[in-house]
Image (cartoon, rainbow, N blue to C red):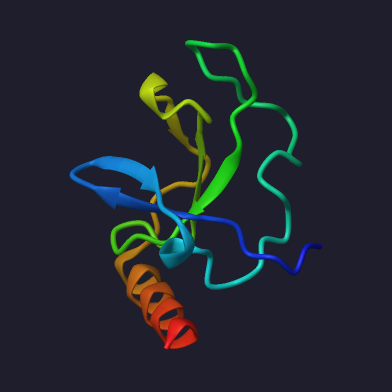
Length: 99
């Protein structure tokens, strides 16, 4: 388990994008973005896609795959959508950790 935080993601206008230090995960990743099986590959370049954790308002704590080449537009959700209760709870916990 790593103790470092890695850039996470946010949703903006239906698209997901990772941002710098301001969007770091509020908790350490238990599994690094490339350390998962079975592998998920970008349909455009064929490279293994890292698995990230979204901390957006709409999808807090939800894991997804995204090609390292953002212009490829490859995004695939790993987890099903969370319930409204869990979305609010995870958002509140995220905000508490960041404050």
